Figure 1 (cartoon, one colour):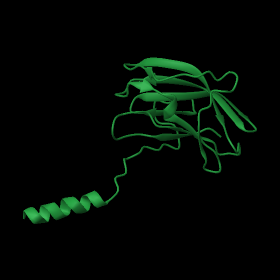
Figure 2 (tube, rainbow, N blue to C red; figure 1 turned 90 degrees about the vertical axis):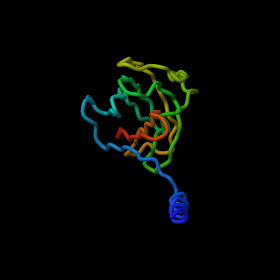
Figure 3 (cartoon, one colour; figure 1 turned 135 degrees about the vertical axis):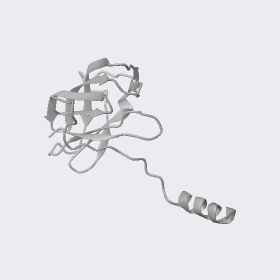
Figure 4 (spheres, rainbow, N blue to C red; figure 1 turned 120 degrees about the horizontal axis):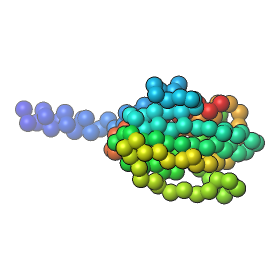
Length: 145
């Protein structure tokens, strides 16, 4: 019996663990106006989207009524039509650096002007948001164009 349990436990460890994700191709409830996303009470809105050759800029605004405790630049990346993922850039005028910001209990943060240098500005452009909810949880894609 103990041997069987040990074998089953060992076999279960051989399968790569993949954390569950939440993907929402359209805005979740309580998330208007689009483009936006609401993950467990943590909401991100995008406004003032500007797509220029090689550069995508936008303003973002957060409201946090979830168990997550912060917003961070590392939680955001842009996926271009070629499926290339790019991080935020801060070297562009008007896109000031920001660091991890602690907030919760319905607090808001923003607006923040953010920028991405992209190889392609052809649609679709997707803002991937992966807020920190602990060991297992969420990421969502916000369709921009």
